[in-house]
Length: 140
Image 1 (cartoon, rainbow, N blue to C red):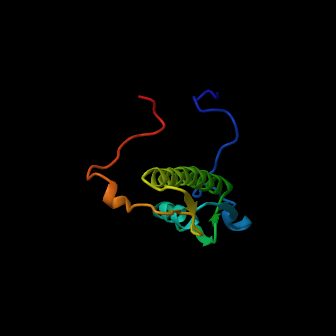
Image 2 (image 1 turned 90 degrees about the vertical axis):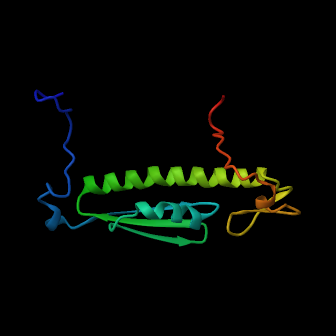
Image 3 (image 1 turned 90 degrees about the horizontal axis):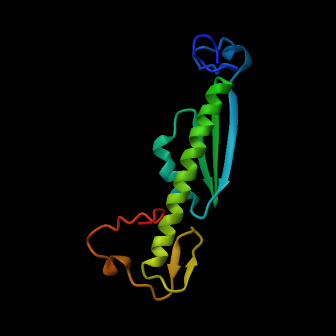
C-alpha cells in the first residue's frame, strides 16, 4: 500500500485520463457464447447494452463486440458484460426448469431452446393467481 493509502500496482486509466487514446486507436474485444435460448438471453441483457457494444444473435450464439478507447475501459466493460451474461443465463435456465416442473410430462427442447411437452396442460390453467416466489438456491 502506498503512503497515501491507495493500493500499490499499475494504475487503471479511465477513458478521460489516457493521453494515448487518439494515437493508439480503440481497443476491441469480441465475446461469443452459446445458449439454449440465445435470443432470450440477449434480450435480457439488452437494457444494459451501451453505445460501445454491438450485439448480434446467430442461432444459439450471441456475439458481443465491445470497442472502448482504453484498455482499462475495455476490461471494465467486458467484465460487466460477462457478469450480466452469467446472471441472464442462470435465470433462463431456472425458467426452463420451472416450466418443465409445472406440468410438462416428457419434456423435449424445441429449436429455440424452450421446453415443449407432449400432453402438457397450459400453465395458465394449472397455476394459482399468486406468483411462485420460492427461491430454489436457499434451504429453509
